[in-house]
Length: 156
Image 1: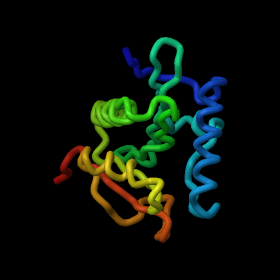
Image 2 (image 1 turned 30 degrees about the vertical axis):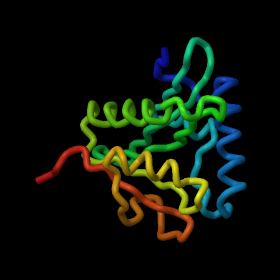
Image 3 (image 1 turned 45 degrees about the vertical axis):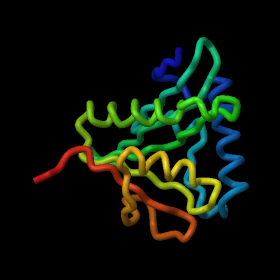
């Protein structure tokens, strides 16, 4: 059974997964277009970090960064290579969206790559209602980035 819990991004197995994530991002995108955070940045006070585990085995991770009182950003969604195809990313994303609603965010944003490597992630986000949008705070137009938004609550 997969469980999703708050966790420490500096935990050994998590830090290794995040290092692998960063390596892939730098291998896939130009350095100036890599917006992934390392484990120390993911421990910041404006970030909530979860892992998905089966027993003690790390399956994946995801983080929610608040960039304003009403807006959040998905950071560092990653499924361990040996766990892909099992629905881990879907479970993490569903959990993250539910948590964003629980803390009453109006919108949830993300940045992902334009390269084919990121196509499965883009499809996952689209299936969950995310649509393309302009860059949000902290970003600028970049041909290597796609920005997406999920409206959680319509603001009058």
